[in-house]
Image (cartoon, rainbow, N blue to C red; front, top):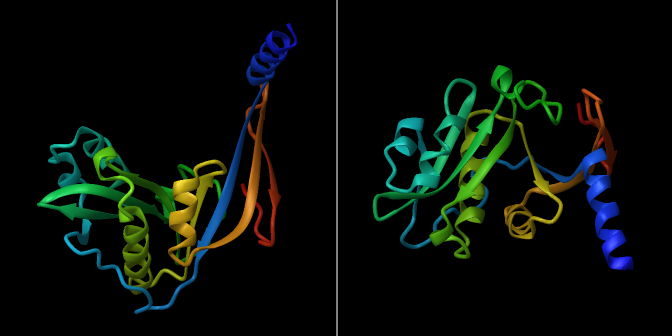
Length: 192
């Protein structure tokens, strides 16, 4: 009976107060650092059209992340994109606007690896490759937010020389238009 009541109380709390807990990562690397090779894999910048022509439906679904104010990077195996990441900056990033960006900064807003290619270290290498390319393009700071319990993604960022700079707890009270965001960590920036 206690388990039943606890489950019902948890369901009710979920309806009244939605929440999010995110870990914020930052990359301030230097040009030429890191090695992005991974044997049979190729890494490169791509356009949305490359994703749209994929034979993998879940890769096709990532194409909308491209366009003005974005940079797309992909990992390719046997001429097929198996992983993609997208950075947004400037006006495009204002759609998300979760973490404050300065001029010459971008946020990695999507990192996706096709299910059949997971567990091979591809995401980590794609993060490393794309980070270096963004630095070469003149970006001074890169950011990412990762759901607190997404341990594979957190490990990929940590192993790619991205620093944990904050944890953001986001509360969505009933009928509240703007979420309440609390920052925990060493960063002096506050989430929007």
